[in-house]
Amino acid sequence: MIVVTLTYKKPLAEVDAVLKQHIAFLDHYYEQKKFLASGRRENRVGGVILVLSSSIQEAEEIMKNDPFYIHDVADYDFMWFEPS
Image (cartoon, rainbow, N blue to C red; front, top):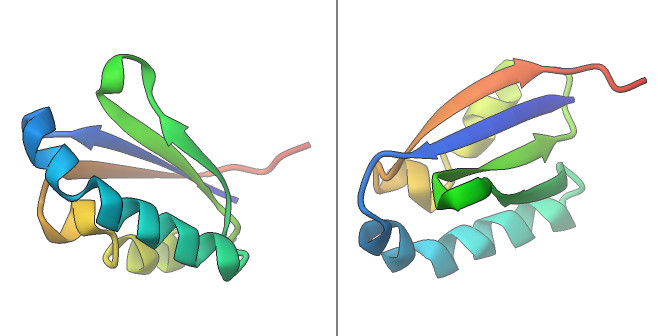
């Protein structure tokens, strides 16, 4: 599993301008069974997405389709995680 941490780098007004598109992106990958969970971080500084993949490269490729990535409103950190 890959833990993706998003940190907003633009004002919330710019984040909110593409939020509906971001939610559609999430919905698409939930339907594809690629995402396990997602949500906002405390104080709306970003979010977290749990990606069902063993490959950071695959998670990076998926995130390139995120409107937050396309519109350059967030930075992404990727961490491989093995749940027990």
